[in-house]
Each structure stands twice: as C-alpha cells, then as structure tokens.
Image 1 (cartoon, rainbow, N blue to C red):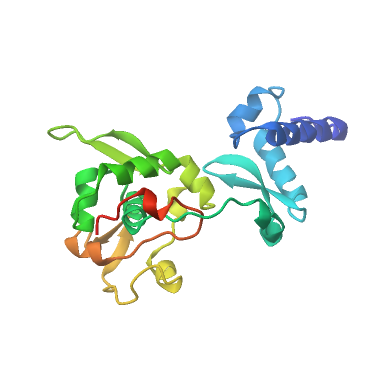
Image 2 (image 1 turned 180 degrees about the vertical axis):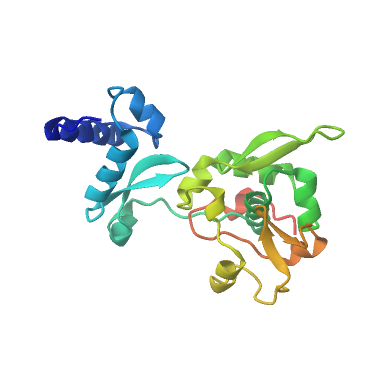
Amino acid sequence: MSDNPQEQAEYLRMIEALLFAAIEPLDEATMAERLPADVDVEALVLELQESYSNRGVHLVKRANRWMFQTAPDLAFLLQREVEQERRLSRAGQETLSIIAYHQPVTRAEIEEIRGVTVSKGTLDVLMEIGWVRPIGRRQTPGRPVTYGVSDDFLIHFGLESVKDLPGIEELKAAGLLDSNLPPEFSLVDGGLSEDGDVEEEVDDVQLSLHAAPLEDEDSVKDED
C-alpha cells in the first residue's frame, strides 16, 4: 500500500466511485480486481467508512459485502418514496423464521417444527422475494432439498451474517417470542433446541420477523 498521501486519496476516491456506481453491494475481492495490486482494500474501505460516519449516507457491511445506506436517523426523509407495505402471511413468517434459525433445513423438517403442512406456495413466495434459496440436498433417501436464507435477507434485515440473528432474550424483549418459553430452551448451532435436539414443542414458539415490507397477505394462503 502506498505511503504517498495523494495516491492514498486517489485510491479512496476510486473505491468510493465503485461503491456508488455498483447496482449491488460489493465484496473486497471485487473492488481489489479494479485497483492496483498493492492496494490494501480492507484498510481503505474502513477509512472510507469512518469518513462517512457522520454524513447523510453511511458505508455499511452486509453479508460480507459493502454498500452505501441512508443514515438511520434520516430515514423519515424517504418515507414518501417507499412502496406501500404488504404483509407476509403468518405461515410465511413462521416458515422464514424456522429457515433462518435452523438452516440448512428441509421442507419435511419445517413441517415437523411447525406441526402443519407447508404449502409449496409459501416457499415459492419466500424464494420469489429473494430471502430464501435452496442450498443443497440431504444425503438421505430421496435426497430432499435443504433451504437457507439468502444474502438479500441479511441485507434487508441489516445483518452481517446469520450469527447476528437475535437470541432468545432479544426476541422476548422485542415481543417476538413467547415470554413463557421454558428457560432450558436455547439457540444452539443456529436453531432453537432443548438439550441440543429440535423438539415438537418448538412449534409453539413465535419467531416472526415483522421489521420490513413483506408480501401481500392475500398472495399466500395461511395454512393455519
């Protein structure tokens, strides 16, 4: 990395231009491809992030990629530009929550946790939104498809990785989880479990994520 202040400033401008022009968040490797080989992209991006910390837009890292985002305290300025909110059905919310906390998870495993059949339409809507994606197949008879959340899900909910999903106490405090949940339940390996195993009682746990615009309630039948 150059010690020349003018070169350093020029590299910062280059990274800034790449991020502003990009149609999607960029990872450091992608930015490095456009810059000289000796440039420390990570250090420069962190410096650029600091320089934007008190401005109208912030440079944030989401799903291991970098993007500019409106400063949270100025979100009210853009409310007129936001599309009308449409809500996801309860079945969709529960299915999305189970996938987020238990991935990789099969459709049969989702049904076992919820205690009801998951319609194909529910998964189709979640994949159409771009929040859920197939991530592989179980090495079991029939080789069922396993599902997980996408980078778009992490970006939408402001998460750097699934490890940043709220824990049980945070969910209770936010009113998204039954406060009477037995204390022996804990988040283990990304999923709600009791003594390390997924039990049927988890079906009573409400893990709905209500934080953002979702699909039309009428677009998916609630299986419940």
